[in-house]
Image (tube, rainbow, N blue to C red; front, top):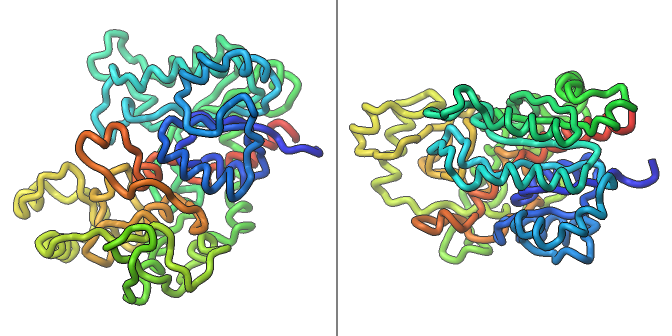
Length: 406
């Protein structure tokens, strides 16, 4: 195989899946991402640093809404028909997520139709589709009893000429220090599958069979803990000003304490200030409250209603992390989690570690946002919370390659 297999990343976010595919030997054609902040991160790391994409001249190299691309460049997309090996990515999950307010009428759910329309135009050999666990669940009050969006997508892709198979996968079993269950759907164009011994269903069997050899090659544990992931970021207590966030403090790297830390810190100087490792400014009242929670709890789960009432906490979710556990699924709300050792929330870099981003991968845009801006802005915490862990993306990329070239 002289040339690398090609793919297009839809709803690419900050580039977690693209980074995984890059590391497994794929070549990107282009990525579609609506958020300018998330695209800046993808552009900085994968377009400028890694030269990962062979971006076509007809598509401006910037953030795009998928519906605008379908409307303005349908002719160019048709010219790619059956010439692309893979279309990867999944539409935004907020409308389906059981972590938030599941809403069947959420306009973002309609992006499923845009996704299928894109597949119809390009007709790639393979499809890799990812979404939240809630994507497989029916909505309450649904007139068509038992209907799930996963069933709708499956039927539409079968009608488009694909054999498809989907399963729920916990990324925490694939080298990621986080219990994060997602719906993965694999599609193979029927004419491609007919000429191959590999079927869509075989992806999940190979994924399970090959993971330990992958961990051995990477020299990482299969189920790293929170402490494995971030203990070196507590540092040596020497505070420095955050380079890209005036009036905020960061800390220097501490000593590497796990194989996972050795893996994510590769290609980064030990005396460098970790990127995006900026600490929140908690009031003394908040610090005292967090210290008390850490003192009276030893479970990595949402604190009780009684304890919330006692402390006057109105938040729906507040989880004190435990050193020897894997992290619960991280979201776009950094104040849902308390650091396992210090009375504070996690930094952006600690968030990134839990999602398996390497430390050389730098994040762009605001650190956080609030109020009405939450609906339109995608700050660094949100970019990471929405991402596919690159370490899982790499494992998926290797198997997808194997499905085309046995």
